[in-house]
Image 1: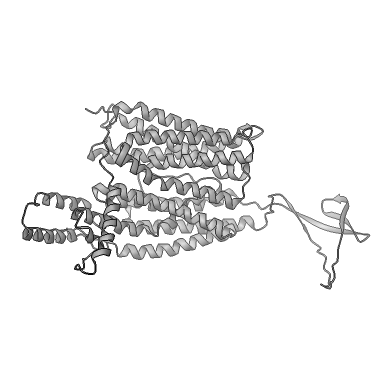
Image 2 (image 1 turned 60 degrees about the vertical axis):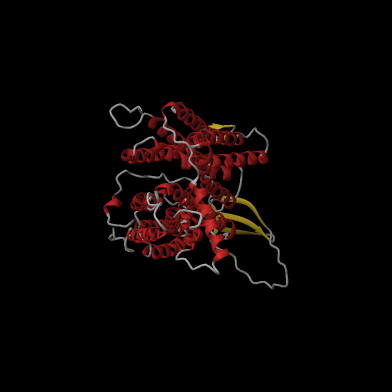
Length: 538
């Protein structure tokens, strides 16, 4: 009998999982909150290199969930995978903190330790990412599972909110080793990750553990590979089949093939989505301060009659508008700002002269005295010449101008990200939901790859780069909207019921099997909604 929390129907083990997730998210977002500033001011990298490394790290964090899912599903199980990769996570944070101590080696040593720490953190956070939520869901019965994800999501945002406020304060307001205390700013997230590991381990006796039952992702890849190989070998003399995956029928069940078709239809829709994440994940790096991700359990967007894909397209439009607003702010920031953010001098009576380009004329200017801040006397070719000057202050743009872009990007993220997760879950067969979640996370990874390529290759001014991304996202939004128009919604639960009902019919003769296959195909087609998503043929 699972122990329950007092006065609720929640299992007691949920406390340990939620606290673990809160501490882990605090650790991750707290470290990322000052990572770009660390590159710029401590390692003395330029902006392009800092942007490239930041997004390479972010991309790696979203490629490694596939590795974590493979380990958990086919080898260790979710519990042991979380434990072991959390240890890797902690080691990465410790190495990163040591690399931020000025007395430890030279700059090359700091860079080496920092990169090693980031790689370990990426494997740790990415590896446990697909496991923690699924492991928490395993603790609940089906009818109570949705409540867990609401609490789980709240813990994620609470951790990210507090970390992005506290960690920059530790860096800027606390001084150590004669400067900003990056060692402390990275050390506190390391401590929180240790707490997360200890808390999660403490609840081990209360957890419901499901043993690994084989990796469905590996089975999907094998089925696709066999279909391609079989088609290549036999297409010349075998009858043509309706779908290329039907060439796997010799070795794989028709149910698995139908489920893979459903998953592939969704994965095709994912192809344009990395562009959204290319914009969204630039908030921390380009603004040097991460946007606090605000979400609410009551989402006003749910009141609107938007289908999921339409809602995602709307979110992409809001993200593009946010970068349009960022472009306007950036243009105003850089109009008159000096390169070193200090006041600059502009001469009002500029001297004009004509010279023959075949000669080299050399002028020597030497300031010999300054009687007041509005006039400078210079010696030019033996003559004393007075130059009037105007002291131009560095450009001053109020930080409140960033509010519109934060509001727009937050609305876009809520409509796109949360809806995308719900869509991925609802359109996936019961045994392939992890496959689509891995595909969803890969869109984030490829989004960071896009930023990495643009930052390294384009070499554009910041406002031009913002404008480029905004235009690209609008173009991608149009493409995605066209793809969404032709997408047919399905009900995987009905497909599961259909094959469960037919699972006992394998002993019939061949004619009966053919009739059953035809009937099943017809019923499978009837499970699809119409392309506009307004009705159902069930």
